[in-house]
Structure formats: structure tokens, C-alpha cells
Image (spheres, rainbow, N blue to C red):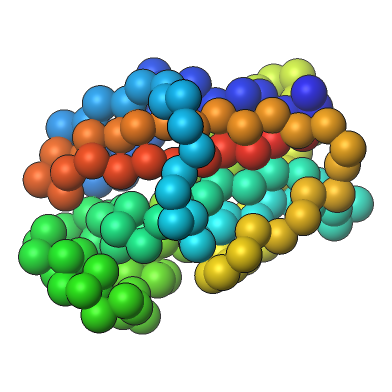
Length: 150
């Protein structure tokens, strides 16, 4: 792998720092169901080399928790089937910070270029590894995130 496999301890610390919520994180066996929000990360050659994907409920919780929009706001977005502009912008910022989970002192640099909604984009390398993590995000409840890296 050219990039790091994200680990629960780093995700927990990062989300705790970002949101101020009590967070737990652990590896899961099954991939995220209904994943439709994808942080797309590229390398210096503009190739897609990593993804962070989640479903609507996780996207709403991550987007709302960053600026302390109450959990009821996240639940309403799930019911409506759409994130507000504020939650969408916040989700982008969370995904941007998650980019550091793929890197260490020995890895190449990558950066977030966009958050796609819908089908996951293809990764421009042959070999990838997927890690799914379950997260308990304080008042926002349980969610899952898939990390795919080359």
C-alpha cells in the first residue's frame, strides 16, 4: 500500500477533537450499507487513490456534529433525504481532516478534491484495501465509514 490503513484509535482521536463528542471507534467486518457520500482523495498526479465513504445518516451526523447542529437536525435531514448546505460544507471539512488518516511520515501526500454523492468513483490504481469502521459519535449515535486506500 502507498497509503496508511486508517486505524480506530486515530479516527477516535480525530473525531473527538473535531466535534467535542465522546467517540468510540472499532473495525467492522461488513462494508457500509447504502454508502452514497464519498470523500475523493487524489495524489500529486491527480489520480484517485483513496476514498472515505458513508451513508446518508453518517453524512448528516458528521456534518451536523462539526458545528453542533443538534442531533434532531441530522435526523430531519435523513428524513428529507438531503443534507443542508451547512451540513454539506461541514461534511467536506470533516472529510478533509480525515485525509490525514491515510498518511504518515513515509507515505506520499494526498488531498481531498471533492465529496461525491451517488456511486463511488473508481480508484486509479489496481490494488486497494478497504477498512470499515463503526463509530459511536456521542449524541449523534452510531455510524460507519468505509476507507479505501491504495
